[in-house]
Length: 293
Ligand code: SF4
Image (cartoon, rainbow, N blue to C red; front, side, top):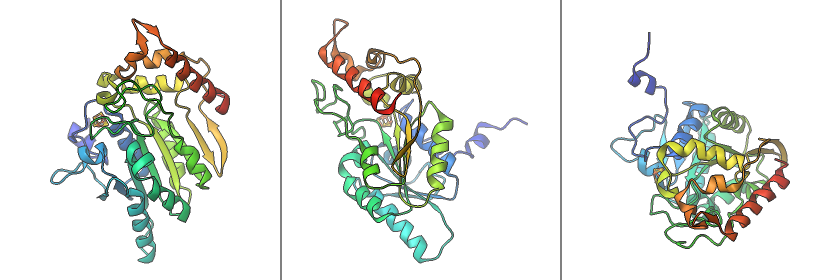
C-alpha cells in the first residue's frame, strides 16, 4: 500500500514544515546527513540559517536530540557532549557538530581547532553557502573571489579559505567534501566518517537561492556546475592522504557557473566577461592541477 506524505515524512530526521527558503540546499544537505547518520545521533548546531529555520521552540523539525549552541561554539558543545557520554559510560552515540560557513570559517574556528586538536570523537559538518545568510548575506572567509555580497557590493577581493586543508594539517583522520547533487556520495562519506574514531570534517557545498540570486529549483544544477567547472573539487582525505577524487571528464568553462547566479552578474559587462572571470578560471585550473581532476 502507498504511504501517505505524513507517513513518508516520519522517516526524515529533519521533518518538513521547517522555515528554510524554497530550494535551500542546506536544508536538503542536513536531511541527507541525518538520514545517513541515523537516529542514534545528537546534533549540536551553531546559530545560523539551519538553527533558525529548523530549531526554535515550539515547533522544531529535529527528530533527534538537538542542541542550539552559540554562533561560535558548536564544536566545543559537541566535544562536551562526547566527553559526558564517555564519563557516564553511556552507550555510544554519533555526535555531530554543524554550522554554516560563517560559524565554521570565522566565528567558530577557534573551537573547531580545539576540538580537532584534542581528538574528540565528533563529526563536524560545514554547510557552505559562502556568506552569512541568516544575518543578511555578508561576506565570510568562504565567500569566493568576485562574488557580490552586501558587504562586498563591487565583488569580493579575497580568496576562499581552504578549511579542509586546515583540518588535514590538524591531523584530522578523515576529511571530505561533498555536494547535494550526489546523494550516495554524500551519504557514503557520512557513514565512513562515523565509522572512524576521532575528529572528522565534512564540507558540504550548499547553494543558497536567496543569497546567490538564483531560482530555488536551480540548487542541484548549480551544485553540479560547481563540480563540472572544477570550482568545487569533491574528494576524500584519510590520514593525510588523498584517497578519492570525483573526476570531471568534460570540464566546463567557469562562465557557465557564474552566469546563472545574480551574485556574479556584475562580472559580465554587457555580456562580455571581465578580467575577474579569467582570474576565477585560473582558480579552477589550479584545482584541476592540484586534484588531477
Ligand atoms: S537564506 Fe539561504 S541558507 Fe538561509 S534558509 Fe534561505 S536559502 Fe537557505
